[in-house]
Amino acid sequence: MPAALPDLQQYVGGDYGPFLAWDKVNAPMIRHWCEAMGDTNPIYTDIAAARDAGFEGLVAPPTMLMAWTMPGYGAARPPGSAAAESALGVLEHIEAAGYPGVVAVNCEQEYFQYLQEGDSLYYRSSCESISEEKTTAIGTGFFVTELASFYNQRDEAVGTQRFRVFKYRPRASESI
Amino acid sequence: MSSPDGISSPERISSPALSALCVGDSVPPLTIEITPRLIVAGAIASRDYQDVHHDKDAALALGSPDIFMNILTSNGLVGRYVTDWAGPGARLKKVSIVLGAPNFPGDVMTLSAEVSAVDVDSGEVELQVLGANALGAHVSGSVQLVLPTR
Image (cartoon, rainbow over all chains, first blue to last red; front, top):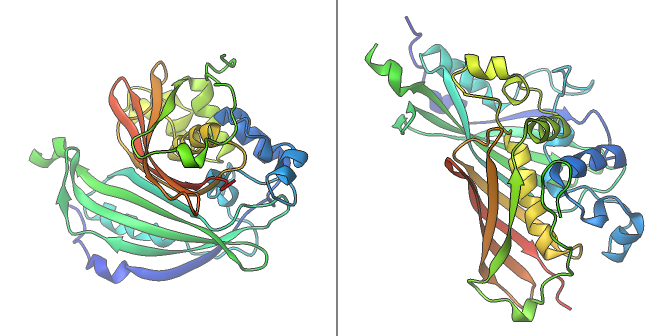
């Protein structure tokens, strides 16, 4: 039998982190990304083109923002990262109450400055909101939004990412 | 022109002339063949090792007919599509996407966009972007960028 659903609003807010990047912003990872995306914008791979565009050197595609701080294959954070997991820890509590499904719904990234080769990133996160229980085409559950704020080695805010997931009980299982 | 991945690459042009840009103008569409190769390459480039993005058996076990593209790849493709059009002098400010139908191998996604706001003085431009596949809208949303003012 599922656990009782706790008061979810107690999980809104918080300040989790820092979560560090394994690697500094670097040309090989940028090139791998550009190959996969088919992105031929020369400011990511050609220093002369980047300088022509007003940068000091190579810059990363802005959409790589979260990629720099992903745990990766080892599913572990670099030393210096916070041990606690992120603001999405509330998903475990919702799941225990009988909502096994999860699907990402929105991703909203803002970029305050382009990341330069050599930049060292980390982010902090909070739980921005948890909706009331809602029913959609796929089931009944809760929309949970994490706000991740990214900083460089000078602690300058370089961007944010809002990531919204729907944690739900699938429609088909409702009659069981 | 088509790369080995089946991603068509339009000729790169310099930034569109800001003064000639109008709300309602469309951006030339871009078609992207969704292959296992692209899905896996995008997942690894974004350091996303969730099994549903590379392991078909794991995807089937979760009720999905195949592996499917991860969000960070969809986001990256939207960014690439916009800067293909906007040129190396453009600056991305915000990419906001809503996800719909998954991108499965064998499908084709067509990206299209329309100008929804232009500020000639600041160079700020907003686009509404849609990435549609055979199942419907895979990704939709808005992109804010700044074009060179001269």
